[in-house]
Image 1 (cartoon, helix red, strand yellow):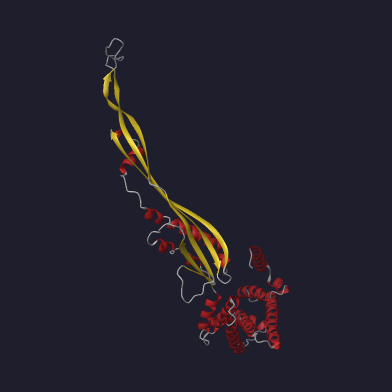
Image 2: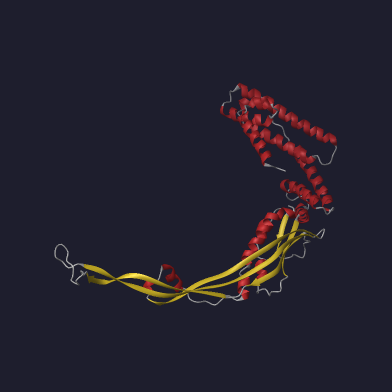
Length: 389
């Protein structure tokens, strides 16, 4: 298994290789990395004697190592060696192409001689393809999913290198189907409630296909040609709809507003004067009133059930998970009597709402479907490793 720790070590190795000199890499036996460094430097400075010396040695040792590997593989006499031999020739060719781009003066100094590996590589590919093809056919007969996946990888090698080889693509499709774990999602109403029309269809629109992987496929409708490895059953066990409830609150709202002016009188009832002898006036206020009746309409539907995972090969229940969801209808409106100017901002908004009918039981149950799908999807996403990959 590839872990973050492995990734850290790999990253450190790459960073160290990028910092090390070509001669250091040569000493470490990292010949191809040494060659890469030397080639890059010699492209800029073809007269660098140190890099020429390093390149000559690294190139020779890398080629000798690959050719020795090929000889030893052939000596084993095993039928499964040809894929490795093909890839080793691929490395020889790639390395030769890389070095051959250097100036002629450099090639002469490292005694570069172009070799023809293509014939040997083509022969190895042909033998590798034949072995992989026949071995994949054997693996596909076992009925084992891991064997089918191994067969797919062997056939993929052929497809990538010899696209039209025999019936490779046909066998790959067979391997893909045999190696895949197929999971069927179903819904069953075990409550005493009658479900709304299209409720099940809405639930089965759950987007489980977004969880598909190479070796894992989710379906919400059964396909005749598929033998499902796992079932996911969403069982609705209890559906409750609350009574329709209207709660009312009566309040009085007031507001002080300007209502003209009046003279300011003294204790004797005479109009007061200011320092200039002018009559003193003051703003007159009046209180506006509105009598508000606020209404709150509420009704809810609750769905309870379980999400059950079954292994169809053993017939065993793998896991069960309780699910509960609720949809609440909340609606507010208001009516008033009196002066509209006395209304608060909140009441002004509420009086724009008009009385509406309550949703029917079927409608409010139907409205639970989106949340129910969301809960089921998130649970299955969390648990999908239970179905393999």
